[in-house]
Image (cartoon, rainbow, N blue to C red):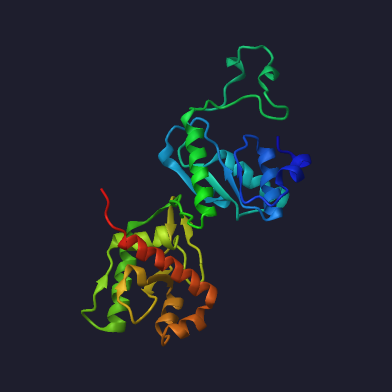
Length: 290
């Protein structure tokens, strides 16, 4: 059993990863805070109770846990007690619970304390479909194994992107290409390609500054971003396009070559962009299998 007294025993030895699958809020907070303090990677699991759909599982930052009651409670107390607002990964489901806590009246024993299996843990429980925590366990294992192997997957975004904004971004790109390279220049991407770049690759952030998106209801607001060629000498295709703010894109387009690009944005940003674009190349060149 993890608690503050067992922290040193359980977390010593420089573990590679910790999966928090604890069902008690205070214990989860203690474990996550200890991992953050020690610099140990931790994956915090949200609630599986009263859920049944494994296709709704998502990986996100703890700061985006609004749709998960357990995750939201952990986020709130991490911030209040430890000043931790983000930087902790959360596995959660976007599915709304189909039931609530078992009522005291439904318990067979007259003494509710008879149902407390572990001291300090809650008495009333939420009904759980056996496959739901199993699906979450498999998802958590996949996350950890691929991360440790150096091939982590980004995970699907919690909130959707607005199709009108995607079309607007493509029109902006067409205009930028025409202004830079003249009429008739080929823009080798579609709205679907733009969606893939924004959602799956760059996560609705600027490639060079990682300037974030804004939430607008259930959608991501990325109207401040424009696509432009990363390497001006290469065609306007998916693995050569990077989202930036208009000011960043205009400044980037004025640069004279890839040497000036690295001087402008710095080695870290350029290495990150080129790593992401290499992933796009692999995605588009993968052979079809049946």
